[in-house]
Length: 175
Length: 138
Image (cartoon, rainbow over all chains, first blue to last red; front, side, top):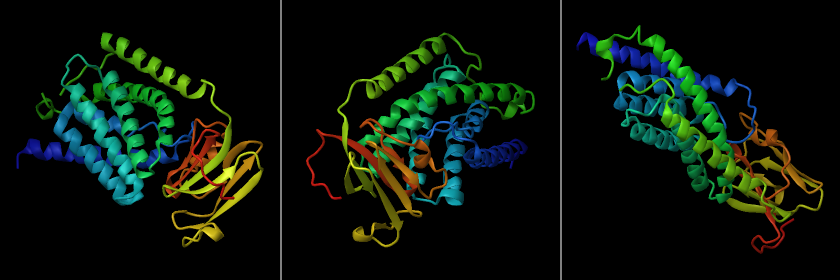
């Protein structure tokens, strides 16, 4: 195996471990708005970093593995929580991938759109699981909170990316 | 896959559009006058189990256990759950869940926002007088 591949796998493993940890730690943060689905999504910082440095395929792979591992470790696999996370992952990753093809799009729009679609995916999945359209009412609040969270995540991610650019070898980074 | 790390014109258009749309949506859902709530529907595992009178002060205690409607026992609950109806408002007073989101949500009094307790598979909705015709269970 090439030295570069080993280096990439090691880095992605570290990023995956950090994202799982952030996912877990987030549960201990105080909740200011007691509405289901409202959260900062700090694990997405890692997602944006991986998308920036390693490209779309590894971004999808990292998020997919994170949802599966968090499901296995904390929430249980194939439970309602797992399906909610998975639907959020599918929608947010889909929009992030679509938007990433436009080179003019900034990290802010990418993150906010991704965050909003995460909420939309989760609410639609919840409507199916609980057979209730009433849950759509949450969407109005979730769109606002997701926009704010997406903006904050993008800002933090951009700060980290600028520092990591000096550390991660250029030849490992996706073009 | 590099993308811009700095905000640009697209952000200046996109972000305000999203925020204004979200605020308009919220306005429509919350501030457009609605009928006063008359009943409280309690769904457990997607099934409408209780249909209570919102005008009558009462407390409903749901218990974890094998399904038995007479004893208010439901298998999906993580622990006992207390639902209180008082002064035309409803809240989840006590429940067992990791984040206690539904008990933190507090009182609701209008048919515009349900109380959802996902870990217990419980959804509480206030219905207006125009809601579906159904016999009052309790």
